[in-house]
Length: 449
Image 1 (cartoon, rainbow, N blue to C red):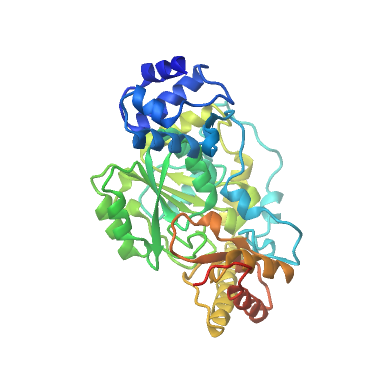
Image 2: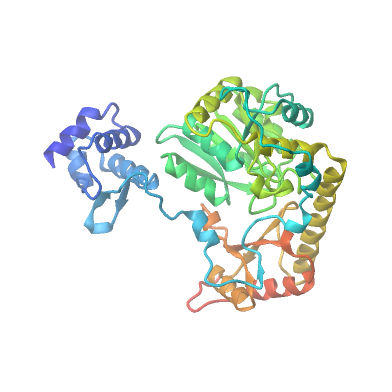
């Protein structure tokens, strides 16, 4: 025990929770603590290192959130094996006990509304060979098309393997252990899993009808914030779209802070709203990501990213250590889909159809006395009396929905379920009736609201 405390003390460069968490991480990396070893008790560490118990407890909490240790009550806190994947919030969303006749838990687009790949594939004869492994990672013709459609005056882009790949690259390049990062509440679960995996301190801020709460962000900024992650259109799960008025106000609030804004525009095509980005006012501090998974197909695995030049260079260097670039073959297919009139019309028609499906269910729910916020996208965020009871009742009717708990980071908003209504081709009235009944269902021992 004394040897471990001495090792931690040698690496402790500042008497804060973050400094202590860094020191413990260094001790683990150096081999002085191995998987399964117990950390010294909080009071012992506080006494020996002249820290407050609150500081030590906060450090242990940071280490637990990032998967470095596990706290098990009176049994103490143990070091976990590093590099081992652990179940996260996203797995909770996707876990199913049985197949459903109508699975609305997935968040995926309707395959029948995706544009045909036929013309794009007919243009391809070989996968192509780069001149060298250091060729431009972005297909020039694709970059030209994307920049012409971009929502602000960007001059360069990266193409990556989807929005989560972009956010992973940014998080691992820019964030340090213990950094405070603002996210939306409710929030897309994989983002929370990602941020916790790099040791970031997640700071949830509520979303209202216009986007991220201005008052909530102002309160969060009372302590330095390294980054703000948000979805400007059809926020998942609520369907809220950021208004231009709110975006301008958020930009004013963030101006001068040095905080990086990361915008995940994953629903850019299946929505009718125009693109609103804080990069119009904060181009030097905004990374804007546009994914093509919902509009052109999740298996394309492509997203485009604009960001300050320094960050783009860092991301490119990071990718050179791994996959190097996103397949230019897939980039050629995307270029074809973005320039072929038939494909463009197909995506526009899909946008209208998704809006029709969403409105049909939301309007029918309103007639049953269930009000749903948001106005865009594939999903709706339905308030329910008891989440578990609602999920179970719908499951019994052959309908799969996602539980709300993995999306929720703050208390006090009541229970919810997420329903991917973009997959509902017909029977909207009948579905709304089932959802309304489920929303009022209580389980044994359910809380009274």
